[in-house]
Image (tube, rainbow, N blue to C red; front, side, top):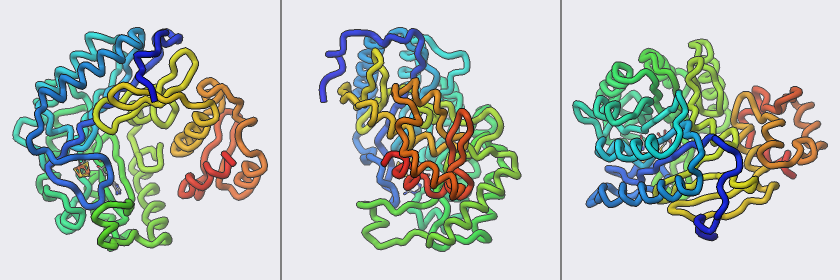
Length: 375
Ligand SMILES: C[S@@+](CC[C@H](N)C(=O)[O-])C[C@H]1O[C@@H](n2cnc3c(N)ncnc32)[C@H](O)[C@@H]1O
Ligand code: SF4
């Protein structure tokens, strides 16, 4: 690891796009399923932390002044705990110091447990133009099981407020809980669709190592049932005009998350805040960057593997030309051809002239498929 300021040259591709991730690793309470890096919100001095974030942004700006920022994403943790005036400071800095894409997407992940009467209006005034709400469940027993500190009524109120306040909105839900069946999950799916959100992120519950759920021995839904509920969910949402564009993500036409597409399509992004990371192409070399300002160079092979793992998450799959442009290796020379043929014969992969993508059944096995391609 070395400090990025040692990198003297500027990014060679003029006006290359950049996505900016701002991580706020503080929460009011810790949910028993969550393994994201977070701390409790007690005694946090926001002004000091925001000051540090601005210094880190300044360093990146000095390194890459010619970039065009296409998206900013405030994630967490619970970034809706940041005072809107502090959010505005970050957005203002980015707008003043970089070129900004005309259709810049500026998202914030809000938790219903931080709601106050004017929260969404204040966030909009601070510059947020896309609000993603951590609903997680729309009934109180699932919310209690997930250890959430809001109830379904507050989630509904927040959902109404965000569709009234923003033109672009999303909600996160966790399903395939241990007691879920297609029948008892359907009412939540129907209800979330009734709000007219532009985007939905629906995650199957994963029992992550080291979490309270793992320690308590909570078990995931068995594989057969989780496949059934996953297939039902994606078919249901497709009928409701939500395009299933990524493993867990669905969007009305034109509303896929521009920010998250950067991760899946191998674009450049920086991460600000403890535990945040990024990927940067500087002078044709690839770096994994970590906050506050260090980097590790990735070999073309390491970058190629990442592009396969991330690209297979997309319904459109991996764009083979982009793959070569990004990592410098020809796609067909990189992937294991024998395994590729087998996976195609099993209909787990579908290949076109430009793309390689998972088939309907393959979508449930993308990690194993990516490993086979990279063997
Ligand atoms: C990092 S969290 C931040 C969201 C925000 N703090 C909140 O809780 O509302 C992003 C999303 O990941 C999902 N998530 C986190 N842990 C998960 C798990 N173990 N299984 C499935 N989904 C999970 C949740 O839907 C959550 O909204
Ligand atoms: S799910 Fe969200 S609110 Fe809960 S601990 Fe994780 S980051 Fe915090």
